[in-house]
Image (cartoon, rainbow, N blue to C red; front, side, top):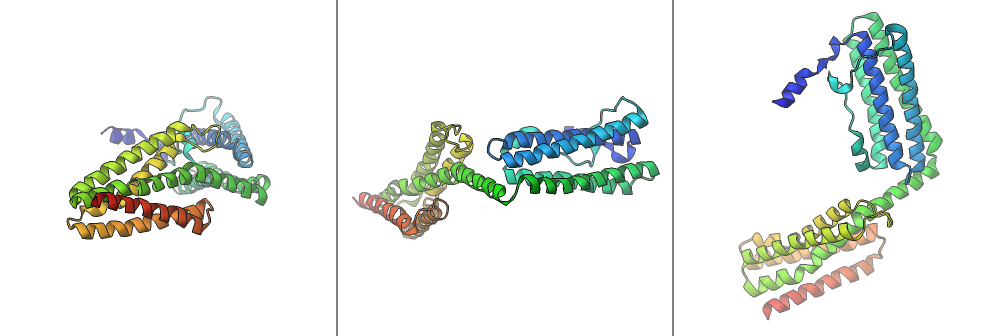
Length: 327
């Protein structure tokens, strides 16, 4: 109900006067400049060259804003109507500044291209729906200005992001991804896959009751996931180690820990004990080899060493669970 009321409160673009169109262009340039400065501030510490790109793009937006204000003063005076993107139905929107911290440098570059492309498409489409000659000219000029922004963005990237600088920033992004997601996620997957083997298979062979085994495995997996998630998030805030957000690391570790245990727990939803156990054993084998592959692929651990550490260790834990269950 409130959403429908809010949508109806927006004005159609066709109802705007030339002064309001100019005011809308001014506020849009101001917002885009602010977004680019936010990108630059967020990237400055780890990606200084990309930060320079966004700093200069913000200056370009500010220059266009100043020219638009000069045009408004010449045609309509000093009082600029208060009209923004969110006041006009169908107008492109921008994400709020506080979401910037959740974007990667690559996503920010893609978002900048999207921002310029949205503005071009909007102004091109708006020209088709306006009959007044001077208004059509104004919208066409704005569309050309936005096309110029895209060209400028390319030139600025070439200036501040030569191949060696881009490679260095990509390496930094890769390292951040490994430290924030892959490393804690891999630790969680290893813990969840290996540490739950003994209790699950001990319960399976001791009771030969698939439902009871499932409940034990479910509780062990979820409990281990919660424990690993909180431990990862609490022991390092990431400021000195450079390992990134503790929340993200804790989430990656906790989820992967739970997945590691649930992989060989879910087969015990199968009522037949030996069928469930055979499927669980196959999944255990796949989990251990997957861990060895991830270690080799992302952590550069020699494959044979990873296999020896993970597969052999997991097999010993599995054997211990079966022996204890039979006892």
